[in-house]
Length: 318
Image (cartoon, rainbow, N blue to C red; front, side):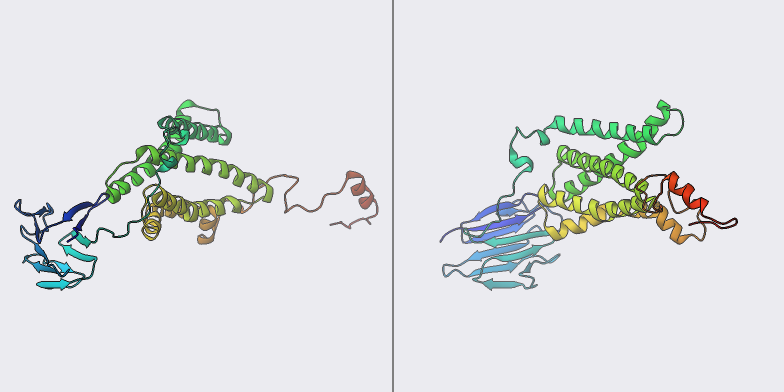
């Protein structure tokens, strides 16, 4: 008979054993054919017999955490259909045919090419430096007082370094738990690229605030960034780099980004204005932009004097 395959499903990498003899025993004891070290597995958990006619017989040996065969809790289970899914405590096992279909190969970041500069370790250092520089420039352009190195370092550390470090730490922990490996370099590069994009778009949002003479543009930008873009970016990373399923990636991305989204909502001035009866600042930007959409159409000084000369005493013009 052609050997079958026993698949032991674990985090990240699965184990595979050839089922090439009439009988196999699985459990935690060291004299089993396949040893499973998980504490929820009995010393002798199940026995598998394979007959000449293709019938596969499974016997449940466990009293604690008895095995389930194709989601059925039975003392004995017999079938000729493959695959067979077996649940043993916290361990999932499958019996597969050798020609069982495997999923398509997932590509490494940068297609696995060592000459891809974007995924080189030096790229992570360069991008981190650009993020710190961007944070320093943001402080310089928004500081109305004399520039002090102490204040600059505090701002960059709080706004840039801590934000980037928090995302790197959270993604690293999730990746370690999910696929049992660390990808610090790829996580650092991905997070810094997203952060640089945020700095660029925040400048555009500020210019739009000046154009429309309202801080509504920056409020909408911050909400969309944390509620939509950050979950989408994390989902894309989990799908393309970590190779998790789409549904699981979306759920995890929402979970990871939710604290940042809640903080952005709580600090959003527009939301605070809607929740409070009184706002200390007016809900508009006092700018003199010639492109300000709130301004009326301007006229020349000559036209102004001509219109003023036509007015009777006590009248005024719009």
